[in-house]
Length: 414
Image (cartoon, rainbow, N blue to C red):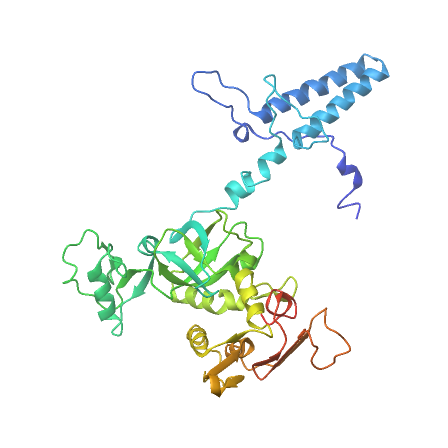
């Protein structure tokens, strides 16, 4: 549509000049104020433009006019972009590279990300993250000293009065305590300045700002937040140490690793907000990525390798090993019972269970078929290399599990 976007608009005839408060002079103690880079560059533009105008009016040689025109074009270009290797950079008299308009806007330190996109909020924390394979993917380990600072406003009722009174008595210094009490009239009392906490009476509809505790709903975030899985809901687990703890399988949606990355924790401040996080933002509700319509969370590294080793043909476990693994299983079936051993040698008192039997214990009641790329197509039912995964009614009958079956692949079990 030439009325809305005409190609001639790409040619600059008028250059807007930003107001002085956008480009204030740089003041250094003991020295005279020096002009901002933008002001310096605008002065060069005006001088270059006036010189070209004088050359045209005095009918100078065409070669000199073309050189001056190229200089003006270069000056305008470096005013907007001055960090491209293909373009000679504009510098000041002291050989300092001039900061262009685009450099002020883009990047982590630019105006957009550095000033406009960020904001300061209460009831939040920030720390380095570290791995913890012992917690679930929907959990996050929170240091104790952070749990004593972040609070949740709990309303006093007849049901929770005794529990909240105990938290008030514990005070702000003891974990599982409280920091403030707000009475029904809205008066706020700091428990760090109150000596007689045991005699404090909690009326109905009073608010106790208690410490963060296990299983509280929190929001975890890593910047830059590029998609909706950059902010997800987790259950808090209070731990020792100074870092946030995260399961390795949930690092992919955050695009996080453990080489010094920092992440943010936010505590919802109402029951409505907690319910919204629990039913919409919680990690199990974010496993399927809308970008590829497949799982973005799957087994990685040690857990992936463990699944493969456990489901190999020659993996067998004795009764003690079987019982130890069964204690660690999060039950997905109604009744977890020890299955009969697959190898029995009564004369030698040998009873062995296969790794596939262990894996079947924590599978839900599902049916699943998957054929590996290396599968021999001549064997329709059960290839000799065990490359076809067959699950019937929650029992792994055949197959070796790998990245395609339990990882982040499109047809994986995740």
